[in-house]
Image 1 (cartoon, rainbow, N blue to C red):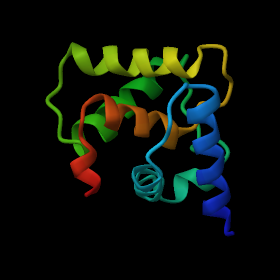
Image 2 (tube, helix red, strand yellow):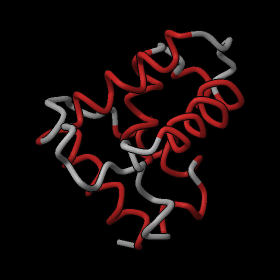
Image 3 (cartoon, rainbow, N blue to C red):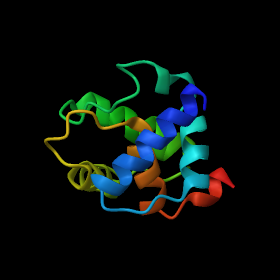
Image 4 (cartoon, one colour):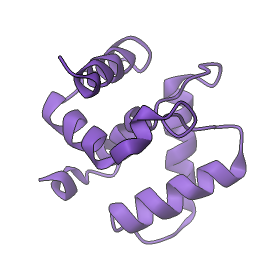
Length: 113
């Protein structure tokens, strides 16, 4: 297995054990690939949930630009909900896992079709 496969397995484990979800491995793989090289960098591979600027970046670059959602308060509400599901005390919130949960939350799996 390559490094990306190892990371996808780690993300699937987080979804199962920390978020209580059974991951759709095909979608998780596509979301992970969509994150590009960010998944290999210690800083960019995670979402700093306590930094408002980071959450704005998730909203603008992922929800609005990637998923094509209209800006509104429900976007930030969804981000906070996903962070809560992941566990506020969980130090490493992987970007691919957060993006996967947001994709599922908004029913935007077709973006990765």
